[in-house]
Amino acid sequence: MSAPMTTGSETSPSAARSILRERRFLRLWCGTTASGLATWALPFVLGLAVLERELTAAGLGIVLATRTVGFLAAAPISGVLADRYSRRAVVWWAGLAAALATPFIALGLGWSIPLMAVAAAVVGAGQGACRPAFQALTAEVVDAGRRRQANAAMTLAVRVTTLVAPAGTALLAAVLNTWWLLIGTGLLWLAAAVLPPRGLPAPAREADGVRFFAEFGEGVREARRHPWFLAGLGALAAVIFTGYSATGVALPLVSRDRYGTEAVLAAALTAYTLGALAGALLVARWTPRAQGRAALAGLALYGFAPLSLLLPVHPAVVFAAYALAGLGIEVFNVPWFTATQREVEPRLLARVSSLDFLVSYGLAPVGLAFLAPAIDAFGWQPVLAGCALVCFLAPAAAALVPSSRGFSRPKRC
Image (cartoon, rainbow, N blue to C red; front, side):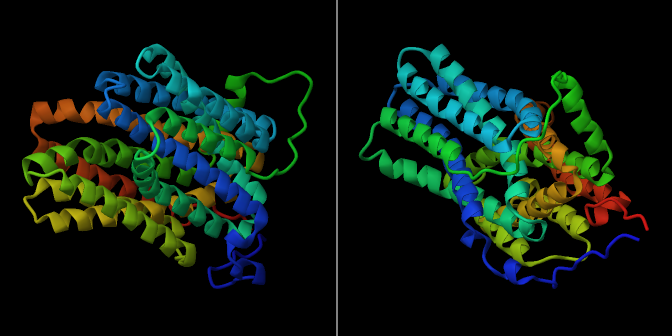
């Protein structure tokens, strides 16, 4: 018979100690934070370049689009490499590539959009390569009993960077020009490459290499072994495709046309980030019995974001809805990452994580491209109603899968 599962109340002395006091995890956390700051700062730095007429709005769109393409192209490749070789080595080379490519974005300012686009694609590839490697490295550096706390700390870092990066960029812009700000993001990528500690030794490989598609397919087969993972990923993709797209396209339009000010847009996004911070703090301490279904319920809260844009409500209702959506997304994220690290076979973890990022992040730009024409064709009210409905129903459908209750495969006796 399998060993009994521990509950959230069973806390070892080591688990009672803050995870951020562990030197190895602190180095990993700092590296992840540095990569997050670099990732979030780049669009704002390039936005300043547009204001200073060093870059056109069309050029900005091209550069950011190629960065996304680089991310999506690198994620599955890095998943295979991080499982085939050392996860630490993948982080090193990915961060170094992003650091070396960033100065070429600065060099192209004002005279070469193609150079900036190619360099941005390399930076995006570095970002895409780091994500699954960081995910797998967390499982190597942190013991199983403390990964929930570690993942909460990681997601706190991500949310803090979304607040700090724009504000920090604006403050530094008072004393530094755009060129030096871009170089600063390159230095952050260098820190992301250098700081993380070593994980487990790289697995032994046979002399004859295995084809990339065969290895990635092995990761896909591992994902298919976990019905809860497929159901949760499907729900996450649906919410990102609809709810995230509503935030990116409909929120600015509603802020301008209904409320007559961009302040509603800024306040709603800030409320979302603050809600996400609260959610990360909550799940670091709270372990419900049915962790998976609680996480999916949190994901469903995103439906209140498009729903608040559908009705002529006071701006405070919009802010509350976005704070609730932010809280819910972290109530989902932390148990989701922790379960993936626990349930997936360790040698395949980076590949399964890359599949997660590829599907969820890959649908984000598709949803953004789809929503604006849909609003033009059907009107924003039916589209927003559909987005809210999908956000509520997709997680509910995923919760019907039996193994989704605890984000785990049934234990055999």
